[in-house]
Amino acid sequence: MTFAIPFDNSYARLPAGFFSAQVPDPVRAPRLVAFNTDLARLLGITPGDLPEMAQVFAGNTVPQGAEPLAQLYSGHQFGNYNPQLGDGRAILLGEVLGSDGIRRDIQLKGAGRTPYSRGGDGRAWLGPVLREYVVSEAMAALGIPTTRALAAVETGETVRREQALPGAVLTRVAQSHLRVGTFQVFAARGEIGHLKRLTDYAIARHYPDADGPMGLLTAVRDAQARLIARWMGVGFIHGVMNTDNSSISGETIDYGPCAFMDTYHPDTVYSSIDRYGRYAYSNQPDIAVWNLAQLATALIQQVEDKEAAVEEATAIVHAMPALLEREWLGVFAAKIGIDRPGEADKTLVTDLLTRMARERADFTNTFRALGGPRARDQFTDPTAYDSWATEWQQRVGQEAAPDAVMRTANPAFIPRNHRVEQMIASAVNGDYATFQRLHTVLSRPYEDQLDHIDLTRPPAENEVVQATFCGT
Ligand code: AMP
Ligand code: MG
Image (tube, rainbow, N blue to C red; front, side, top):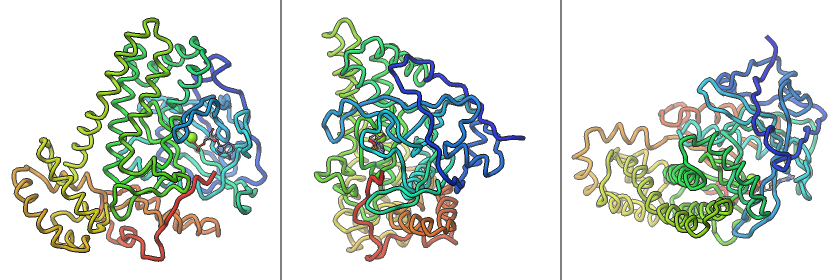
């Protein structure tokens, strides 16, 4: 059997204004360093020999059926509108229909310059490629909607950042790469025909039951609310929730300066470029509403009766905070063993979180330890836990199976920042054992895996990662 990807492309059928045809720029000496066999199977990809796959996933060979292109979009970056972004370092090879019936994009990230590259080199270095590979696959294993990683290739070339670094290409798989910014670019330019076409395309691809632009807005709202609540539940901080990184399908997309919290605090920010904490942990729900409002503004442009559309869209957006709150409560109630929460349970959750923040408790380990003898050790003052736990015990006493609920809501393993950094440092030195181990352990995050208990530990003082970088 020879290597084959069963492409079935739809984006390439859209009008020329949606994208630029663009073949990847070949690299010198591609070497396949990771390949996701399970995902390949889901996508109906027949694996081939390593050098052949390295050529394809590096962009040196355009596989049969691919129609490589760079997508146009715009977006608000840190609240400011940038009229033209687009795939500056990513090239869509095409789409496949998975064995689950879902259509997915196969995209090379770091495959060279495109018409949207502006000043950039169109490349990526190994660090962010492996970070995205490990973290996006960990998210998938946690059960959180996300883009996936199919392959990673070292290019055999260096990329110039502050220093010369090893180049790499990531193959990313997404339910689509449609973003809020894809709608914004046509709305802002007054290209209403394109906007309508895009709306129809998004509905057909993601929400076939949605009725028109406002139906789409509602569906995206619901998907985003579910997504953000799930991020909150694992202590995930996306770091760059710009509208161009806000996906229409409701998947987590664009793993740049993202991070999982160790010690819990609602104001936590890691991204070095997020100076004012716009995308801090606890701001994420508000930002999701803000981003939805930008989608609403764009979608309205195609509706004849603007006044009615504005009214309808406003109602849809204004309902999002309550929806987020409901999703959030569902997630956090499960984390303390409560299956169908009532309003009063919210106080119980927020009380715990307040104590965790004050007593510098590790987010992941505290929830995982709940009910056990070690939970109180997570708090600088353990009595802060004891007094909460008394009340909590009374409440969960009424639940049928609190332990089972908590087991599947509280992972033991998350990709901790210091472990991700150590993994990257090893890989740069040619050692992929750490990458393999991290990836394997994180594929079963809810299992104890006692042999890997060291990966559950928070960083020692000298291991703490203070800031994360976009690393583009
Ligand atoms: P991001 O912050 O990763 O969402 O990227 C924002 C924009 O910058 C997108 O249009 C990217 O395609 C573009 N971009 C990021 N890095 C590069 C690069 N190395 N070369 C060209 N364009 C880039
Ligand atoms: Mg982006």
